[in-house]
Image 1 (cartoon, rainbow, N blue to C red):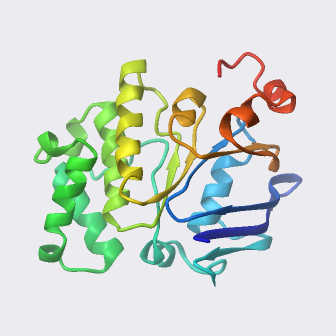
Image 2 (image 1 turned 60 degrees about the horizontal axis):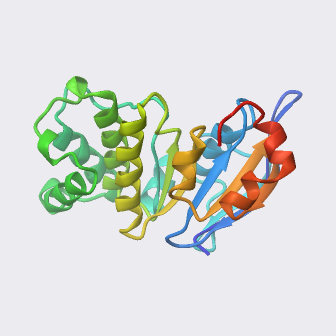
Length: 238
């Protein structure tokens, strides 16, 4: 198993952001995570990526306990993440942003990662924007760059945090196609998303969180058809 999360628990005072959560991710698998605002989705990502330390539980990558390691150590070990609001180096070009991710994430010199960065530009459909300053990109291309820079670190597990938010329907379809291309390279994905139809087009398995608890897990459509899950998503088109 690539990722094994066991008994993961995190509290902020009286609020439990993660309540004894268990799940696994196999190599190359795509897992979706849904839930209402405040369900604990982003906190779970922060725990996996190392931005938060759990109060209890463990996180294993390839069988190795990484619970106490720092974020940059997890990046080098093979975990990368994107953020809901893209955070590129705006004064650098798209290609330079990828080089920064590759050099620091893979601990390699620039000349050894140039070719792989070029390949990633093609995978994420950014090749025509290679020499564009990141600060001049459209929202869709900024989101593509956020993913591309994460991929440049050489991950085996990619965490995507609501990357479809704010996009039009056609832009969302383009982004889904890009994520499918990324998946085809063998990278495992955990994707948090409120736009459920986009998620269902990609993932193999769906996990539902509510108030920090895992309330459902399984085949995506079966999970979304569950009465408990439908109650959570009253008024949300699925």
